[in-house]
Length: 126
Image 1 (cartoon, one colour):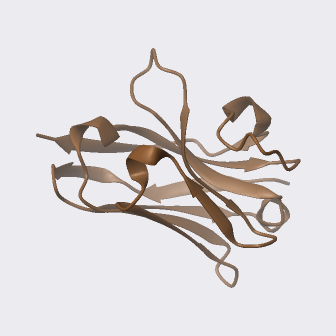
Image 2 (cartoon, rainbow, N blue to C red):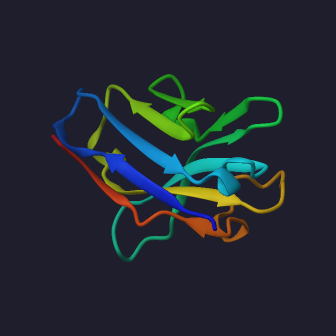
C-alpha cells in the first residue's frame, strides 16, 4: 500500500523558516520520483517545488525555491523533508508530498504523480 503523510508546516513571518516532512511507506519510497508540490490557493493548480530522483540523488527545484529550499531524503526513516528558509508570502499554500509510479523528465507535471499525501498548510505573512 502506498501511503504518504505530511507533518510540520505552520505560520511564519517573511524571512523566517519552516520545515515540512513526509513519512513515506516502504512501497512508495522506492518510486522513481518523490517530491513536494504546493497549491497557493484553492483555485490554483498544484505547482512543483522540489523533486528527487532516488536512483541518483538528483534534485530539481523550481526557480523560486533555488537557494532557499533544501530537499533531503532519509532512507532509514523513510522521510522526505523540505527545509524552507527566507520564506516569502508567495510561498504560502498547501504543500503536498507526492510519488510518481514512473520516471519522467517532466518532473513538475503533477498529473504524472499517482500518489499524494493529504497536504499541510504553510502560511507566510508579510
